[in-house]
Image (cartoon, rainbow, N blue to C red; front, side, top):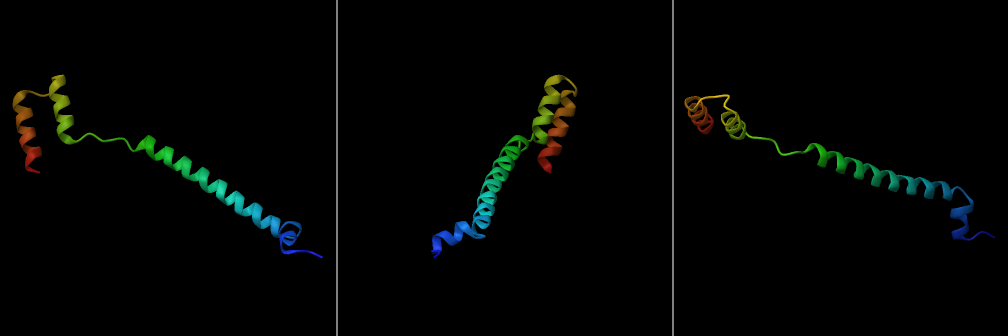
Amino acid sequence: MHTYWNDWFFGWGWILWFGFIMLVFSGIGNWGYSYSAHRKFDLPRKGARDILDERYARGEITREQYVQLKSDIASV
């Protein structure tokens, strides 16, 4: 005579449990991978003002160009 408990493990029920456990582990793995990938590539981006300041600091543009470009950025 089979009981309810034995039917789940000696019949086809063990395949269902195995599938459920595999879904849980694959879901956890997928979450971990996507979490680490997003942390890796979601870096803060520089704004236009930061890039302008760096160009002026390196000497790529003159003071007049810097002031003009800064006012253009502020008006946008």
